[in-house]
Amino acid sequence: APPRPAARPYDLAGSPTMPKKLEKVICPDEVKEAISSLRSSEELNSYVVVGYSNKNTLCILGKGTGDLREAKEKGLFSNDKCCYAIFKSSHKVELANTVKFAFVDYTPTGISPLRKGLLSTHKGQVQELFHPYHVSLECSHFDTLDPKVIADKIGFSSGTASHVKDKRVDGKAGNKGAGFLRTVPGEKKEIKNKYAVSTKGITVSRKLKMEDGNKIADAIKRVRKDEDPLHWVLVTYANDSTIKLHLTGDSSVADMCKNLTDEEVFYGFFRIEETFDDKVKNTVKFGYFQLVCDKLSPVFKGKLATHRGFVTGIFNPFHEEFLISNKNDISEEIVRQRIRKTTGTDTTILEKKLSEGWVPRKSAATSQGSAAARPTVPRGPAESKGSKKLKFTDPEKFKAMMSALRSDFDPTTWLLARYTKKSTLTPISTGNGGWVDLLKAMGEGEGAGKGVSFALLRIVDQIDKSSTIKFVYFKIQPKEVSPMLKGFCNTQKGAIDALFAPYHVDFFANDPGKEISLQDIKDKVGSASGSKSHVMKKKENI
Image (cartoon, rainbow, N blue to C red; front, side, top):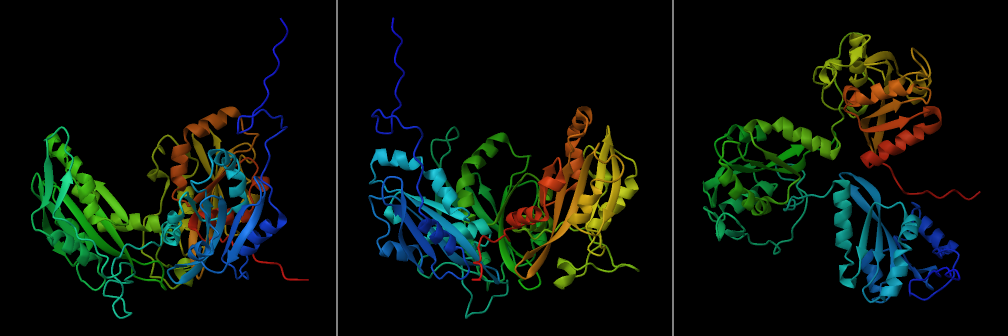
């Protein structure tokens, strides 16, 4: 029988064709220049909208100095054509103005399925053209092109979205701090007294009621108000289908926790103030917790599970949520620590009292005039899980090295240790010369080139006018290390990492001199903290 002819390739419409490869998106230089110019700090335009001049060639549809609303009014978004846009906006983070970019992908439903299929192959190329940006918005309907959605996305991504509902009174902050945002009079929604709850498997029908009418809702509103002294609210059950207001207070979170027991179910809502730095004080954060003790019967716990969604809705919105089973699982210190980690204000610096011969280093604590350091116990080898199996050639030396690095009053900026044989970590050296000195030290000392090196570097990350301390963790594993030593080291990775924790970012490399630069470190730290800028400055005309 004659051989069967080879099948011919098909295009997206199903008709046979013989292309050598899929056609790429064609981007003229004027489009690239318009997008690049938008990132300049000297550019007046705040957005660029790009469409198609034919099936795969991009063109500029319009530019402007306004926002998404202006672009819609100009008719740049139609119901039968796909387009892309990038918007630049000034976003205020506390007292600092930052520039944020938002990418919009508009593919309306009026486009034919064949065209949508072709556009889906352009998606990656187009995103790469507009990259980098902070948030993105994909829309298929004209009405969903909302500038408020972009503003909300930027706020949540940067951690600046506020859940405080009441504005400042006469331009002055209330007695609880900043007093930000948010609702306009007349837009408040009434909270109903009854919440329908699905309780499949328990009863046919049940409603969760509030015994005190609107007292719970009113108390929550008072906590949110900046001029009201109320700080916290506790809610519990009057019976298995009714919740009631248990206690309220204008004191601290610590006092609220004293009123908890392991005999009842509690829902709590509280307000707490956190300081970002000495220039931006009294940042308001809200927290919610649910305490369901282990002593409750499984049947009642099952009923509580059906209430969770609606009870949480009563207290929404909030910044942090705590689901606990013991009253000791929540305290003011636990709450503050969680908030600091979320907002990035936890520097993880171990501080000492100022003693003779010590000169404070220039850092966030000293340069910004922060409060005096509180003495803490320095982290040592004994604190890490699995460290009993991990031996130190000189544990006291390692502990002293780590304490000096974490201290705000010691000039040390890095430390280096090395895994040279099974279950043995050797402290190598410390220094105050930054990345250049650390890189040099990685090639020196006992086991250099034959052992796995672990290092911790302390750097200063500048966020506008605030200096913050960041720690960078390095694992350097040269190719010359024996496979057996690599295996032993990997089995104890968790214990070793715990010794150097906490840190903000980490690097793994075989040859740090070729794979890691100081700029790489700064970029990674900046991306993690949100301080890295994507604005490109134009070169001066020569």
